[in-house]
Image (cartoon, rainbow, N blue to C red; front, side):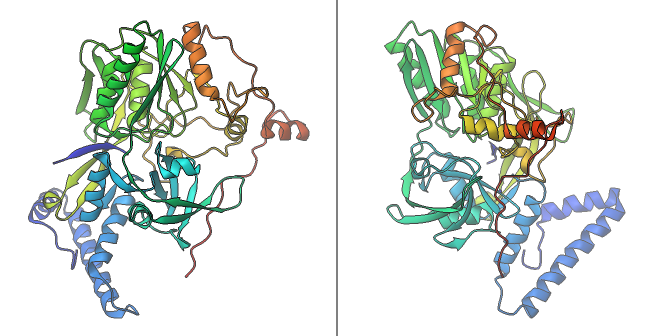
Length: 472
């Protein structure tokens, strides 16, 4: 059974179906056939050489699995080969229960990066942040490991302690001690903000739509005259496409949610909402940031394009590609997770690499505003060297000063400035009607330009930590 996700051969034996496919391609284009068979022969020769010459005995199965992973990961950051154990772990995760620390991670060039911590888990309580690097687990380096291999290092028996070494911009590397738990990620939390409702959706597992609907029903039961709703998708790493459509359907009265386009430009698959929205037309504001990815971007983009909600926060992550998980022999040989399409918002926008820009750009903290202005806050799909390009050839917005940041008299430790501004938009009726705050104070880049006496902004050096080189 194939699953659509929005989301780092001994002697090389090919199945009969694959051979038939190669045969058909070969008859049409003989040169590629010869090249393909030559490369397969080369693979077998290399494997044979390693088996005979490597300094210690090798595990053929592990070598070939690594080759399959390397082949797929060379396509883009999200394609992968899943071993049978990997495939089972993926199923456990999307079913909404698994053991571990509660961190969504990815990998680029062998460096493990945090997409986001999952609400209410050991990782979130320890203060792990989106964009952090995990360089070691229990003192053992994880540099060079795949995402799956790194996850295996972090998972274990509930109740056992695990130490993570974290590298973060503008700080020295440090260790965090966490205790593993059986993770029961609760996708949704909610509460009232005066006459307004607040619903936080942390991820799109199989329960997401039902939990959001239940939260909205509970808020309206407590206050039948609810004046508006904030949907918080910050640091939501995505998940199942059908759940993104389901959540969007709660807010829309029919019409398109998202379209999906693969290699064949004439083959477009559209996903529509059903008639009859669940909120009675009350105003909605969606909170997003650079950790808002994949399925979360589908919801944000759909509600923005359909003029059902306005967006507040920072530009989203920019993962606009669709991965299909194809089990091999029913999962007994694992599965292939491969990028099969880009998705497009109702107005036809591809947000791959570029992300979704908010209607009101608001930094969460004064420090974050400075990072955005100085390109230190670069963790996004565009930061991957082999990321799939945007279909329209667009590029992500570079370093700039955010429109708003917390003023000096705002207590950043106690208050949530982005939520405060989202509530302001609901109170005033729209982003356009909401009184704007003074722009953030001069950034480091602007100050450098002024000192240099030039009108252009001087781009400072990168502040993202460079991971240490692998040791032999």
